[in-house]
Length: 335
Image 1 (cartoon, helix red, strand yellow):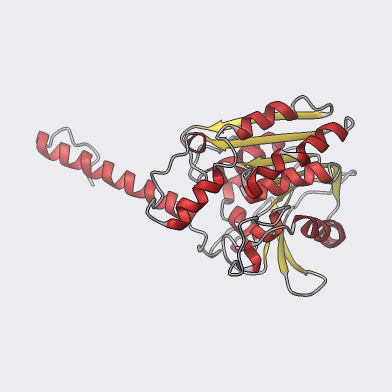
Image 2: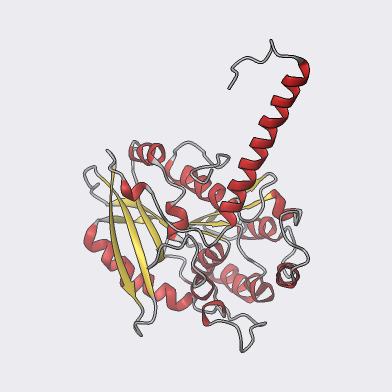
């Protein structure tokens, strides 16, 4: 590869420039496809390495009927436990979140004054995204379900999953490491963000910060924007909480350039997404900011579409809650 092309003929320089541009576009397309591909598997990750600042532990839990299993991965700081316990940063879609971490990020987190325990809540497999998230992260059943809809995609299991978190996962974490109940963050993206908001509305004391990236406010004909929100706003009674809302500029503009518009499933999904106007998230932030006790911020990531806001919202939440560098504009490990 030439380091200096100035001595080449103009035509050759132009060809090299075009080749470089094509490679950049191809790499960007690959990164976008990877971040949107739910079938990616967790392969090499930070779990396969040793770090100065963090060690990792894993455990699994199951539902009372033994039909569902979740895998929880803990990143535990190697420093002495503070008197009040470590802050905790919980992440839904645990495998996908784990794939966004690398050595420099972990070491920077470990260098913070109050390093958090990292709680990756996923499923007991190596899929990046498990379809069971639809069941566990949504508070209402899909009104458009049919007899052919797989049970995992019907939805309505958020309260049952909250019980698993409170009655099973939290006690097991407490057995392994002390965390500070006054410094607990719950982050989620898409359906995970919907779950974070549902948790805020129904169990506002369960966490102290709720980070919701690109929440799927369209679910169940926009039901969360109706009675659940109104009830919460009327009854929160000043309970303190921090809320971080975000979405991508491409979502606001309903960018469909990367979708197969001839696919009937894509068409049906876009019709359902239309149940929540493009400005629903920013308007929600404005309304919640009027609720006594809430500290609400909204951030928009220019040009990013829904899938690409996964990393951006996660890095933004880490930045806001731990003080590390803001990596929300970086491409991360999927490149």
